[in-house]
Image 1 (cartoon, helix red, strand yellow):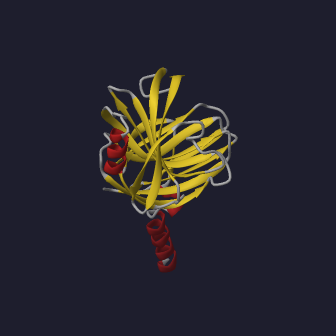
Image 2: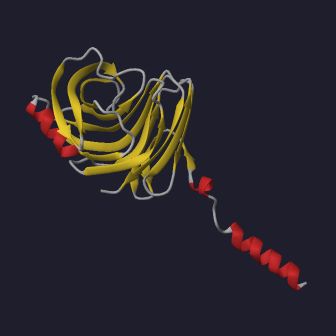
Image 3: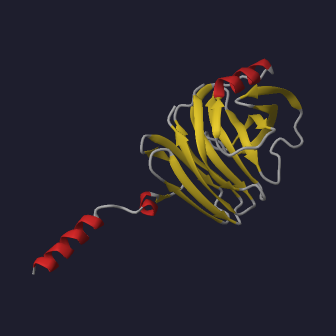
Length: 216
């Protein structure tokens, strides 16, 4: 009887501890708060995307034959904060980006500080407006326009501001003020900040990522 009781007690104790995998919970498309961070997960519905919020600022995402998706964790509202992140990103050989991604209103702007990209440079076809030296690397500055495309305010026409890192990396520190200043110097004006996340994006591709965002 004593042995049986001990086994039952141990089983009950072990059952109270979740495995690391169980700490990551599948999340449906949308926005919200999770473990002290804001998250956003958008998909156009094509292909398959599984996004999972994890402990603190961590998340993972796996995608297969997608049309387009963007997902990640960060803050709402965005700001000129210094952001630190790390993790793994299996998108180097497909059409995918790893970036600091955000929106402003008045004007409506979608912005990217691209840390790494795969087979397609998102600034292709755009005129370079300058460069900015920041956090041990050089970023090329661009502006593009989207016409009648999805936005945080529904279908709209808006500009995109870009800083695209020449020396690709996965993990490090991003000083957002440096990019805001560089955009301003190039005549690119942001509005009132909405959300700002460390995002994984995929376009007509398959891949995976596991990212941890550090509170700033």
